[in-house]
Image 1: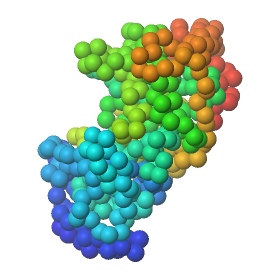
Image 2: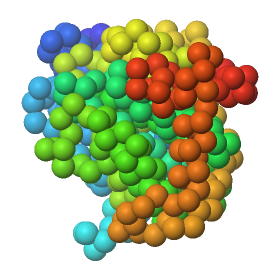
Image 3: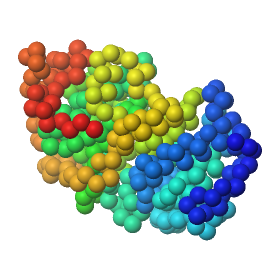
Length: 357
């Protein structure tokens, strides 16, 4: 690619600048390559961004230099860039978020060195209604994504008790993220307390590995189950987004089989994907997160779910945990016992009912 180019995308004319500028010094990965990745991943990425207010994390001088978050769309934008005004209590005014509803908008944001894409869990026209629930499993060193896999499998078992499907993806950084699509009428007043109670339940059952409190002093060697992402005012890294790491890694959807395999082999490298690898996976496997776009699920109505002050997990979650604890592996050991040895635990009925992605 040359330094600058004029291109036509989706009937729109775009000027792409400084294409040879290196944004990932350790990998020699240029701005042109960032734009090329987003152009090629757009067919599966854009549906996940559509109509969701988007925050850009921009690195104009590269991933090893200062960055800034951009919520309010820059005034110097083409008139065809669609935005949505969302009221900000902190700023006491509307913030005009970008809606990356097409490939041309995605390429335009990439040209701004908007390396990381952080969408809302809600659509702009119903900002108080999350389309999904998310758990960000963040390892405190020396723990890594392998231990996240174990916690993710425990989470999946509880969701299965409630007949809810869940879907894992890498964060593209250090951890693993578990998504539960909803696509039904709900609110953060329902999803956030539910997520908080579930995180505390896992912490109570597995204090040697799980923590639900974000204090860094508590997180050494443990996995933070970050439930707080389920908030109208927060965003989570988008599926298929690049990350501003040393190399151009991507937040990549994975199968539960891959999660189990990484845990079994204790190999964190099995769940690290750079841009070219993610593109090849999509070509071979399609969009492993496609179900999040339309799968309709409802959270169970549980008594005892108050606000953040709730200390004891409600009865429904306790029952789910007990059901998981009674699950037997082929060896006859309980799921909890198998998990303590670092083995993924699944009941035979769960294995039969699991849908392969």
